[in-house]
Length: 139
Image (cartoon, rainbow, N blue to C red; front, top):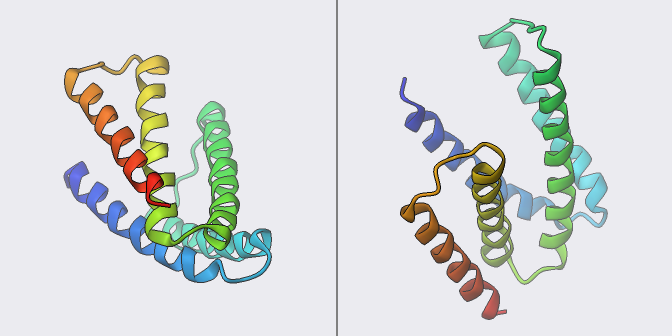
C-alpha cells in the first residue's frame, strides 16, 4: 500500500481526534483530561500491536526516540487541552498548533536531517506563516 493512503488516514484521524480533543477540553483539569486521552491512545496502541504485529524489536536507540516522541505527544496533548479550554475556539487553536508544528518540523528536517531546501518548501513555509498570521490576527 502506498504511503499516501496511510497519510490520508492519519490526516482524517488527527482531524477527528482534534474535534474530540475540543469536546474533552471542557473538563476542568487539563492534566486529567490528558490522562484519559492518553489512556485511550495507549489502549488502542496495545490492541493494534497485538492484532497486526506482535514483533518486539531490539533497537535501543529507536526505542529511546519513540519514548521521547511519546513524552512530547503527551506534553502536546496536555498543552492543547489547556489552550482549547482557554482559547477562542477549535477552528483557531488547532490550526495554529498544527501549522506551527508543520513549520517546526519543516525547519528541523532541513537543519537536522539535511532534507532538501527547495523553493516549494520555502514558499510553503511563507504561505503557512501567512496563514498563521491571518488566523491569529482575527482573534
